[in-house]
Amino acid sequence: MKLFVMTAAAGKRLIGKAVAAHPAVTEALRSGSVVIVAGTTNGYAAEEMLVKLGQAGDFARRRFFRGITLPPSRPTTDTGRLPDESEFPGDVVIVKGIWQLGKTLFDVVDDLREGDVILKGANALDLLHRRAAILIGHPRAGTIGAALQAVTGRRVRLILPVGVEKRIPGDLDRLAESLNAPGAQGPRLLPVPGEVITELEAISLLTGARAELVAAGGVCGAEGSVWLGISGENDPVERAEALIKSIQAEPPFETGG
Image 1 (tube, rainbow, N blue to C red):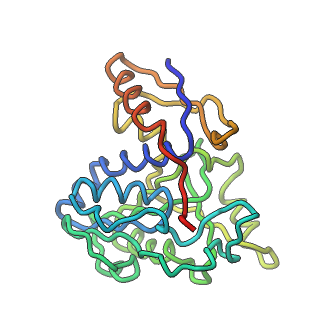
Image 2: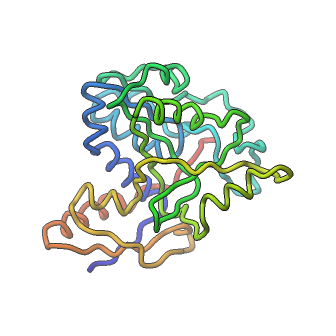
């Protein structure tokens, strides 16, 4: 086993690369639709896909989100939105390999069919059971509320790219019951069905090596970092080492404002 430190930003880049290489995503890019719902981790996935398609020129990650968690010194609205959303670019909708500029999930959700893919980020991760939950600020459950109509109604695949920094020890259903109860304040919580892709799955998908979370934490820019233990046969471990070293210097995410 070899150990590597990975920052939250490097983890997002790793997950983005893995999602772009996911077999279901690759097929949907070729013959169906992929909807990348705006979110910070999803921004890396969108970037990786658009680069592969040769269409990344008009894409910028800096405002590719609807809600965001910032330090208390940087105010957002009560739903996690920035006060000025004039630069919000919308979601990334790709139909048969062509980016549909200006489209959002809401524009295309009724047209999605089995074989299509929706990517949606998450805010809480149960690592043990590979389940994720999403904070809800919208009274109609926002983008995940719309997405689930296609996922449960038409078997559209839901992939949840989420970093292990968002792991929580509690039961997601119990937490949702508490946060969603009458009288509670702040965002609500919705556990969702879907395929969770963390840094651990990303390593396996991209290299064939096994990854384990063995420690966490850091300072001086390494806050939220994790120690990953990589094991397996020599070739997969060497591929994982080369991959991790290629992304370890990924700069921190910035909103640009």
